Length: 246
Image (tube, rainbow, N blue to C red; front, side, top):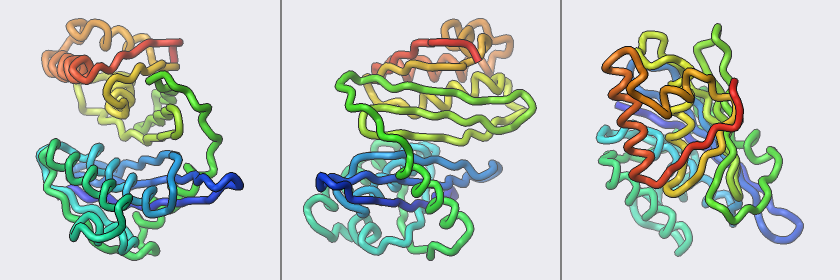
């Protein structure tokens, strides 16, 4: 069973609009916990909380059950029982539609904030909300920064698009036939929205070469993984442009 622990943070701005942050910790069998966070424009805290649930569904393995834990009863009622106002209902339906499209059997339950992974999600959400605002760009593009050191088993992928910032802490698998730097790049591509252009900085030469020519991978399993990722990106209209070498 896959588990996600989510929380959100929200602040009303002087002009009446609101800025929010979401955070989540994703646990899958046999892997270390993965942490994600993002900043967004939101009308209230519940909207930011539901965004965290939506991102958990997007980031969890497809075709597998997922339990999402939150300390927000309004979110539980909206997703599990269809209760709440119009804006909550619309966002809850978006969550369920995404779960259905990805074959994720979703369960949403309560867990207090003082539990370890819930507290981590809370801190991630607060940090995301306090981040710098993103300029209001109209083009469907996102700036991506990959930070990875050869000696570490985790990479940091930061993505900025109009209205939000997303940061993923990616656990790298040393046993995978896909090189660690390419694993970090694939994680960045998974954060893209349909039709988006990713402007990627600090991807390694190896990662760039394998993305552009998956057949260059020495191992058949690595070729298959890279080719599948390329095909999925192309099917969603996602493009990748490299702006520098890590």
